[in-house]
Image 1 (cartoon, rainbow, N blue to C red):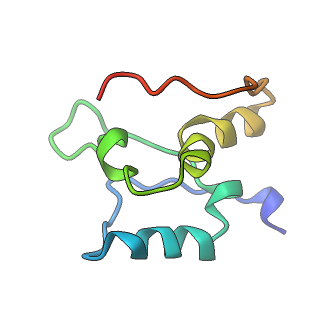
Image 2 (cartoon, helix red, strand yellow):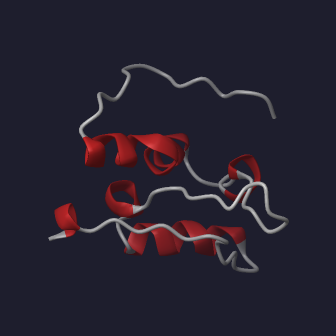
Length: 86
């Protein structure tokens, strides 16, 4: 059923306990349906290096790009992703 659903949120509502965000993402199958969105350069944009810092690397990769690539039929690069500047 989730193969036809995609969600984004901006700004993301961060719970007081960081582990609760991971639990919410697990419950909603974020590894399949969540895609990062940004309101940059507005004052309230979500910095992906900050808001997703406590998530497992594979889940971050899915949310930050792989889910969107799959949705639009783009190839997903194999191997580890670059971390980029902190």
